[in-house]
Length: 302
Length: 235
Image 1 (tube, each protein chain N blue to C red):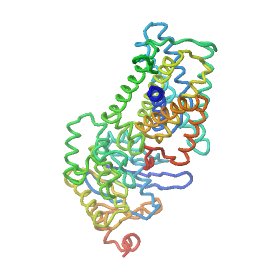
Image 2 (image 1 turned 90 degrees about the horizontal axis):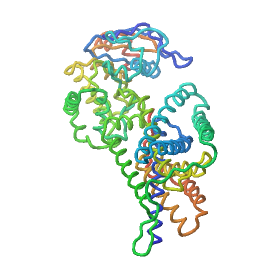
Image 3 (image 1 turned 90 degrees about the vertical axis):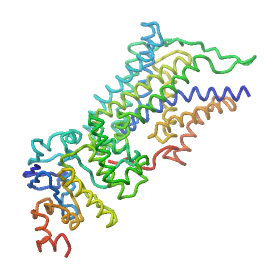
Image 4 (image 1 turned 60 degrees about the vertical axis):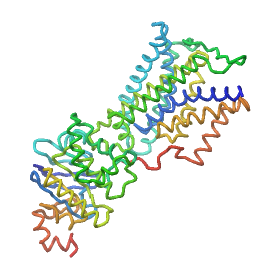
């Protein structure tokens, strides 16, 4: 029983961070039709920024929102100066499909190099602000600790804010309209290019939160060559694809499915199989249901 | 007043509009007719800022239509309903309408426009909470026109509102367009392949042929013109 509970808790904590990553990818995809491979690098950069802010302010609770704001600003900057120029200059022919992918990969390389240049290639340590010792019930120690509980709660709160923003506000309506049908949005008076930048900014904030929470909930060690962050990108992407790549609730559902399946494999089968299962899940899904579970059958219109 | 002078627009090497000139008085309904590939849709897309022109001029009152993006023109009172039921299927009926008024700073005015729209198309009010992809073709077209009307346009550009609709529904849509011109004081330019239907409700007609103006004049004169009848009206 406690093993099952542990599986569930491991799954949910992992899922909460995957869902932030998946939301970042979905928002970027919806606003510019680009899969941002630099997302992991941007999350890693945010983890470093979080580390710097914590060591300067000494307060994690100030550093987290500040790093999210900076993450949003950096992401908006990338959209405004890199992607916009790129889409303008290479909007035709075979290069149009490839250029954004190569550009985000290039950006990933640049970020990694800059991180190594500034902070060196060794580990820096971002200390967790809360205890990571699991709660005990009777004589069993549960997997979940105050830190993990905060991560889950914080992500749920963020999802709530994002839902309200998208479903209940004018900005949200403009964001959705521009994602589904940019031309109609434009003809309705929405300043679509500004809305694109905003989509990237929200993605940047979610990615920054993912990077910092992943670090403090894990070992706390940050390294420019971190494999953990590359995995975060892959898992976030798989979660987004499960959800259909277009849908925000889908991204969260995908993260939950992925988190629970991987936790099941880790606890009941073997931790070494996690990666293989994740990829098999992705392949099976792409073959059986390429539009995802909440993907829309209604295509995007010009 | 809409003034178009020597307007020339190309798609790559193909000239879609060749030195087109005509003007439209405030408050009237002008039908632009012509066969497939005559340049009707290009004309509309150029006027709303989706397509850029090679040369010529197009102005609405003092506003230059050839400069700036569509979102800029909307704020100057020019709304465009593009070809093929221009609604967003993933949004609800009401969200589609709200989208049209999003840029307006005065929520109570936008609310008043919505009430006018619901009066004109009661069907939309019944279905306000439904997703737009559950609507019939005719209802979608009503929604597309209403979405553009929510921006409180002075000049409304409608591209083929009758496309793919049943004759009875077309009749209803055309009557609504006439109503928008007469009671709401909006100037409408209507592009149609359904030439006879369009000319019947229009005040003026412009016949485009291969990117050039073949004939233009009062709609009733065009209907009576034997050359227009044989070439475009089919009898």
